[in-house]
Image (cartoon, rainbow, N blue to C red; front, side):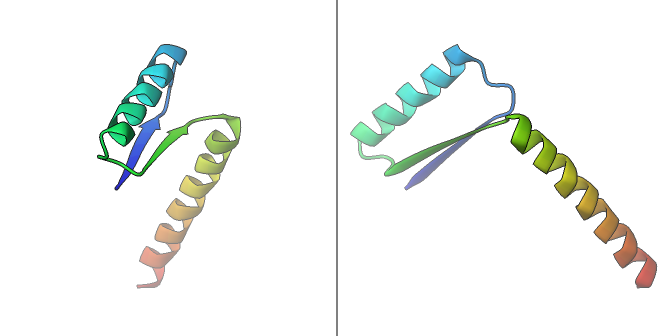
Length: 65
């Protein structure tokens, strides 16, 4: 079982809490893997490009159909 936590504006206390929760879930056998995704400058710029590209693709798709 996989656990995924997405933190857009993560702070240290919340990150520590998430790590502890994943540790407990793993120790209890509830999960095999825990992933925490946080926003950084690289993710922020990548998301902006993906959203722009997606909106341009949708606009051109609507125009051709």
